[in-house]
Amino acid sequence: MKPLHSIIEVVDLNHSYGERTILQGLSLSIGKGEVFALIGPTGAGKTTLLRIIDLLEAPGSGEIYFDGKCIPRSGKQRLEIRRRMSFIHQKPQVFNSSVYDNVACGLKWRGEKKNRVAEKVDHTLEMVGLESYRHRNARTLSGGEAQRVALARSLVLEPEVLLLDEPTANLDPVSTAKIEQLISYVAGQRNTTMIMATHDMSQGQQLADRIGVLIDGRLVQTGNADHIFRSPLNEEVANFVGMENIIEGVITANSEGVATIVIPAQAGISTIQAVSDYPVGEEVYACVRPEDITLALSSTLSSARNSFSAKVTRVTSFGPLSRVEMTPVCHSRASGNLPLSSPRKRESQGQDCGFRLVALVTKISAEELNLQEGRQVYASFKATGVHLINKVAGLQ
Amino acid sequence: MIELWHGLTKAIELIVSLDAEVVEIVGRTLRISGTSCILASLISLPLGSLIHFRQFRGKRVLINIIQTLFSVPTVIVGLFVFVLFSRAGPLGELGILFTPTVMVIGQMILITPILLGLIISALSGVSKEIVETATSLGASGFQLVLVVIEEAKYAVFAALILGFGRAMSELGCAMMVGGNIRGFTRVMTTAISLATTKGELEIALALGMILLFLALIINIALNRLQQR
Image (tube, rainbow over all chains, first blue to last red; front, side, top):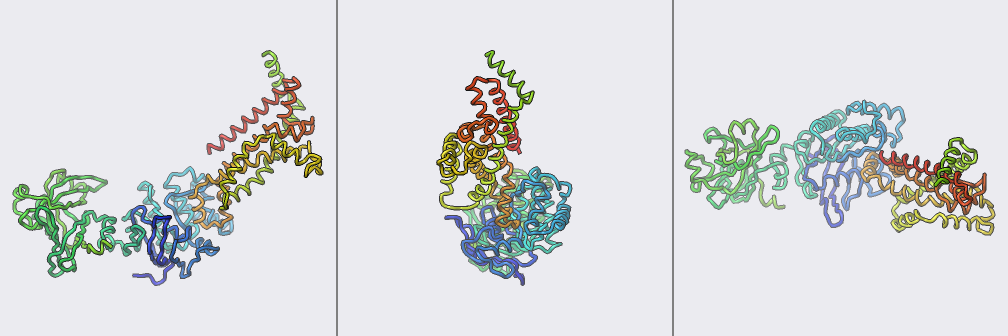
C-alpha cells in the first residue's frame, strides 16, 4: 500500500498550543501524485497539520521531509520549499485588488516574466470560469467565487503539492460541486499531489485515493475509503464515519466465521450474527451502517440473518432520504433474531432490547411503509453488514 | 451683528474676486503643510512598517508614547523648534528661523507621531489571514511587507489626510517659528489671528471660511476612503 516515492513525509510530529496538545506522535507519508484526504471532526488538528506541512509554523517536535530532504526549522530553504507547494485556506482570503492581480501575485513573487504571467493567469481564469471577472475587485465576489479565485491563485503556480483546508466548507451545493470538479480535474490532469482536510466523508470518498482519520491529534486509521467506511478500527472512527448503530455485546459462539453476539439487556437477551473471526468471549462493538438496514412490514420477506421487530420512535427527512430511529422489541424467552409467527402476540409480550437502531431509507419507501412514530416494523440486516470492533482496541 | 454680516459679505467678495493676498496666503499654506505632510509620511511609512513588523521589547510602550504625542500642544512643538533654531540654539547657525523651511520642519515634527501611530494601526488592521495567505503563496519577507502596505493603503491614505489637516490648521508652531511675516511666512491661521486682533474682520472671516471649506473637503475625502 505504501507508495514507493513519497513527496511528503512527516515523522513523529508533536505539537501543542500552550497546555493544549494538538498533534501527538503523528507520522504520515504521502506519495507523489497521491490525493490524500484527512478527515476528522472539528478541532482534531487537521488545519494545524496542514499549516505545519506548508511550513507556516514549525512543529513542537518531529521531522518533515519534502521530496526526501529534511526541512530545517528555520532559514531561507523553507521559502524555497514553500514555493513548491500551495495552500488553500478554509476561508478564502482575497487581496483587495482585481481578480487578475490576485491570481497573478504568486507568479510575480517568483519573478516570472510579465508576458508569461499574463498567459498563465488568463489560462487559469478560464479554467475556473472567472475570465469575465478579470478586472473586478476580488472583495466584491461571492463566497463561492472567492474560493475559485483562491483556487486559481494556487493552481496558476502549478504547485507540486496542493494543500486544501476544507475547500468547500460554507459553500452552497452548486459552488461545492464546481470546486470538487476542479479538484478532481487537476488531480487527474496534472498529477498534482493533494492533501485535503475535510469533515465531509463523502467528499473524501469521492476525491481521494487514500483517507486518513485524524481524531484528537492522532492519525487513528489510514486506508482507502471503502476500508475505512466498512471497517473502522475503533469506536471513535466508527462514530465519525457515520456508523450510527454501535451496539455493545459479547461473542458467545463462532461457527465457520459467523459469530453470534449476545447483547445484554435488562429485559431478556437479543443476539446479532456477524461475519467475523473473533473468538468466543471477546467483548465487541457491533457496527451497522444505517443504509445497510432494510425495513419491511412483515418479517417473511427478508433473507437477512438479523431481523428485529421494532417500534419507530422518530422519522426525520433530509433531501431524498429519511432517517428512521427505532427501538427493537425482543421477546423475553426467545432469542431476538428469530422472527415470531404473530406480530400481534409479539407486541403484547415485547420488551425493550436496550439498544436503538437507526436506518436510512429513501423518502419514497418511507412513505410507502407509512413510517411514523409508533409504527411497528421489521428491521433486518445481513451478517456481512455487521462490522465488529474489538472493545479493547477501541479503548486505546 | 451688523458688523458680522458686513464682514461675511465682504469675505465672500474677497473669495469670489480671488483677492491677490488671500490667494497668496492660501497657496503658501497648502505648500508648507503639503511639504511637511509629504516629509512626515516619508519618515512614518518605513518607520511605522518597521515598528509593526519587528517584534522587540518595549514595543507596546513605544506605541503608547507615540499615541500620547498625538495631542502634543502645537506651542510646545513651536517652542522646541524655536530653541533648536534660534541664534544661540544648537542649529542656530543655519539661520533658518522665521522662514517657511523651519515652519515645514515644525509641522513635520508635529504630525509625525500622528502619521506614525495611524500607520501602525492601519497595518495592524490587515488580517493575519491575509498575511498567511501571502506567505503560503510564496511571498518573501519583503514582499509580505509590500502586501500588507498595499492592503492597508486606504487606511494609510486616510492617515496622511488627517496629518495634512492638522498641519494646515495649527497656529501655535507656525506663529512662533514662522513669525507671520507678510508675503513670506504668513499662512492662513496666522493671518486670521493677526487680522482679528487688528479688527479686520472681513479678511479674517474670509480666510476662516476657506479654512473650514478645506477642512470640509478633507473630511469628505476621508469619508469616501473609509467607506471603501
